[in-house]
Amino acid sequence: LLCIQVIADNVGDNVGDIAGMGSDLFGSYAEASCAALVVASISSFGINHEFTAMLFPLIISSVGLLVCLLTTLFATDFFEIKLVKEIEPALKKQLVISTVLMTVGIAIVSWIALPSTFTIFNFGEQKVVKNWQLFLCVSVGLWAGLIIGFVTEYYTSNAYSPVQDVADSCRTGAATNVIFGLALGYKSVIIPIFAIAISIFVSFSFAAMYGVAVAALGMLSTIATGLAI
Picture 1: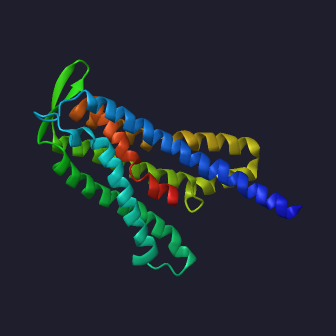
Picture 2: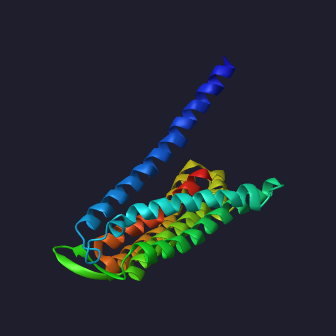
Picture 3: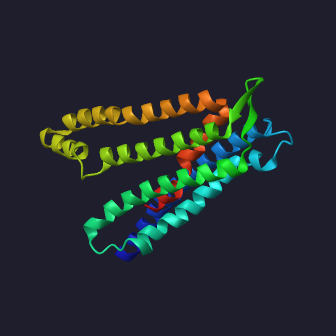
């Protein structure tokens, strides 16, 4: 009976935590990709309406998958982990490595796939955009995602003071625990909100809604590494 309970518990964790979270993030990725493709389809990439440039959102996703596959090699082959305490720093390195590699990859494909100057749809008007501006849109979303990841870890890991302080507040009763936890929850979203707001402002200034869409793709482009962790 105990064996059956353990199996059922593991199945529940797998469905709820792994499959549920994975499908939710995949849904966000698919929606961002579709939004970017819709805007791209009514924009004019060069004189001949270049098809490769129109598929730039899918190229971002493809580069992200390749980068995340390459990043796994750093955990399995390049950096050998021998102690338990080395696991967490190695996982953090993976996030940073994937972000750096993704930045380089996006710079390359932006130069290859996009014309130097093109026009995009901007609320009934055509906005002139340069390929380096679209690269910056993706990059600002990408690095904002890394910042949000580290802030999230700081406020949710038991290795740092926020979680330790919440645990400490339990000593004086449930009420103080709830109040302190709620206050800490409000505090924890300040930096992520500013990171997202700056990303939206910069990307919209450069490339209107198309810039916002590719910035969202940049933010999600290393999601395979995040899910693996």
